[in-house]
Image (cartoon, rainbow, N blue to C red):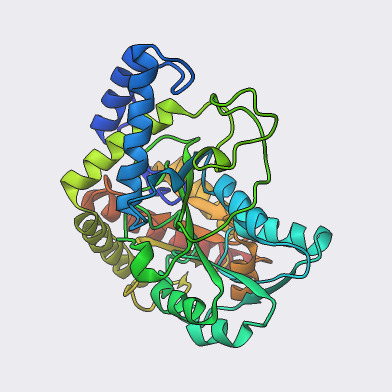
Length: 399
């Protein structure tokens, strides 16, 4: 089944689509030939499957600037939400204090809120400024003697701003506080170096700019950081041992791995190596600039934290005066065959601070590697038509 070729897809912050052709072909070839359980048996196919898994650990450790001498600390799971639950739950205990931001996704907000409500943890949420950035000094001022963790969204899935994680990491390192970043929106778009950024652990997902499938993601943990186990189950090794293994990667992996997802990430790394992360980002930002400039000329279009595209992803949010965000999304879809994301984007604190909760959030455009300038032109014309329709409807209502 082929995807609809006339669909204009601007929802890449949710899931990149389509994927590079190499990802599709490699996944199918690998899974047809080697779709067995890795590390559970000694026959050749199981060894071959396990080899890809282990080689991907090292490849992604290098990609994230982790500790290459301990690639087993690159652990796989379902997605970044799964990884963040393991990290946050594996670090915080009763009496600890955690600092995070109003830019976070619910994958950070909710685990922390549960620990505050049920686990005796205290939390501080740092607001962002009018341009959409968190001031590292605000993080520094919020650190207490009991602060155990600072966790920050590297790139916002709502307004697209890239946070100054290197500066925040330096502050955390100087103060002896663990620093974790959520790379859901940045991995595969912005170069990441855990050592240079003073990052102790990160969470990633495979189905966005890493060009993998849904259902694969994980965490990369520096060798000095201790994470407490919060789950237990099968590992395929040391089955007689009555407790979950303490050694990495099994310490943070549970049950049979998603080998189709692993294959997709391997092929995604091939494609990223070929294209160059910086080149992909530059192309996306050129299209974002064209789209933003075109939409700015339309009467009634309102932007949020988008006065500058410096330190920005190709993701931004708008509203059209007098129209509900959900209605705009439907009109873009039904009348113009353009896919966007409307609502609160699983990031309610962003919308609370922006004042967009009562108007049901906003309309998010997120450009990906396979969008084109022609598609941007269509989107500009579509928003202009919707804005004119909305203005005419308001005039008739006032008459």
